[in-house]
Length: 452
Image (cartoon, rainbow, N blue to C red; front, top):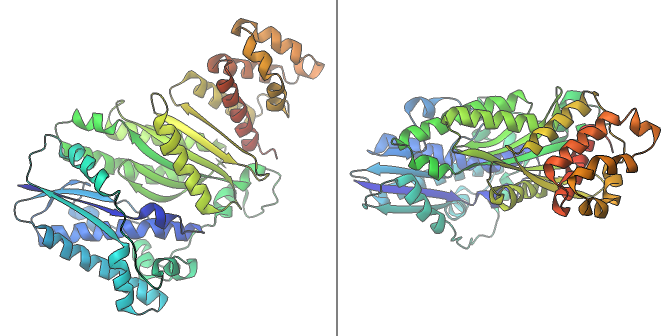
């Protein structure tokens, strides 16, 4: 028996070409579709049995309703399959995409085929070696193989020409995916859906969108503990289906949901819930699907004013996940990177099982439900006393607050709000880095409550 693995690209580079929701969706979906159809052909024409992703006849037949759920990698086993046979099937699928694109953009079919044969990068690996855990061992090999990016030689960038909203909506691929000609909410509409179409709302939160990347933590360790790796793939697929429903219920657009990887566009505020409620719901979906606490989800979140360039917001979310959250001690983290309308930026990262995160969510809920009020410029006030806070023991926090916030309003209208902030500070600590995190948290609350 042999193992054959495939990884495809260039997904990140293609996503960066999108300027509108439909364009980013297609930039991702074209790879998912390629993988789905390649797997389908391999199952029909060969004796291939897939370890990852989990596939069966029903999954390959069912309508995906615009959600790309096939990852950029597969690992299969076979007694008879050869690399040459796989390459022929992949070439046929590349040509099928090229034919669809050529028709959509009214270009020479052969030239588009030549382009996509280069552009759709397919890295194959074959071995007869025995692996105790093929998912982990072969994935490590594929990680190094896919670092190679070939040089593209073409006179015309057909993928860029194809990733145009009007062309996408009328493409065969989009119609097959949705079962009809699709429509996509704009970034403005996603951000503002609770408020309708009036972007002049006084609730400034409706002018911000959350772009989310998610990835599983310690999944390799979890897989090692499981005796049936195919069952792990099935559990991840079950998570993907549940996550898609959770995201849509919140008013979001799933750009990609495959295995433990997610890319999502959602409003920061919807029906009294915030993006943090959604992150908690997705974490719960993941835990229930895998039936474990051993693997968790980490998130990179870009909170962005709706007019901010989409490709830059995507890059910020990706960097927040892989550059910050995945490197945070203990993982299971949320890294927030915010770009305000004013151009001001701030960021913070926190682990979901930290007591400070629970207190932060409680503070958000109390502020949005108007159970407490915070002074308008509270984070600026605290920042002006940052050096003082760094020098005092935590036991003196309450008396220091009383000295700084000594006006009548502080002792009446803002009393409970200031106590809630003290609780958060005690859990974060008074070190400079923790105070910076506090300021970013308070700035995030300011956005959620609709302040400018």
